[in-house]
Length: 115
Length: 112
Image (cartoon, rainbow over all chains, first blue to last red; front, side, top):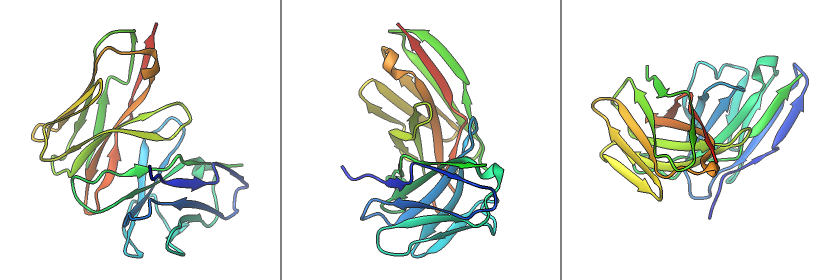
């Protein structure tokens, strides 16, 4: 069964460093999302991406964040200068199309630890 | 702004009990609603998707209902087992590109 994959599973970085989190969505999916979950808190929407551009972003997704689909398979989230409060689990999700019958499929997550 | 609330926050039951987990949302203009399971430190496993035009979905021992007009969904777990112990998350598909808005979850412990 097709699945969303994410790498790395765990990333440790120092404050101020840039990190890139990678995702490979399901191959025929067209809509991509990033979410994050700070330890002990709710899963929060960060950004949605369609047709090679950001379709919606939350207030969390400031200028320190960017997303890219550099080729036909990868979808990346870049944090330019990490802060301690960026420590969280980051989930990538994808869906085939837009509509009520289409569920989002989630990857296993990347745990980002900023020291 | 869509808000999702889950009650109870935690539940501890003996094996075999039938359970009801509740989810409420403030804006009834949703596309769909997904229930997920999350084990500690792990990712999200999708359990059920209910479309906004549907009232109910079933998968094995799980049954989820949706009352969009009142902003409520219920996840019913029949004959609970220790392996059901996890956090259960409710998420509504909302907004222009169907982003998911999550509740804080119900942490379920089923003891033998």
